[in-house]
Image 1 (cartoon, rainbow, N blue to C red):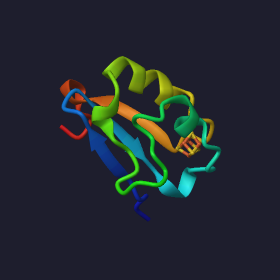
Image 2: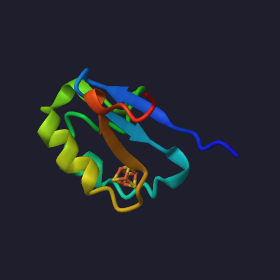
Image 3: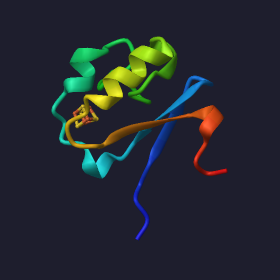
Image 4: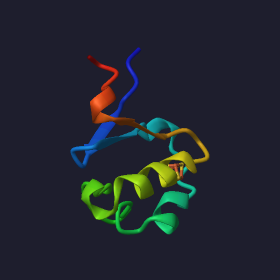
Length: 77
Ligand code: SF4
């Protein structure tokens, strides 16, 4: 069974969102509203903040729906 994943990259970091894991707690939307915009499509705007800010916010996702990887360390390669 494959797990649905959506990828959003600013060229340096890639945000990975797994919708089935998302608890819709809104932590990300409140914490970094320039990137996480639940009313928009796509709802994640990776160009909306610095890479460091994105990483810090992704780490605070309580459900594990958000993860990230650095493009220079792409795990798919
Ligand atoms: S912080 Fe994580 S669980 Fe909460 S809304 Fe964002 S992606 Fe979903």
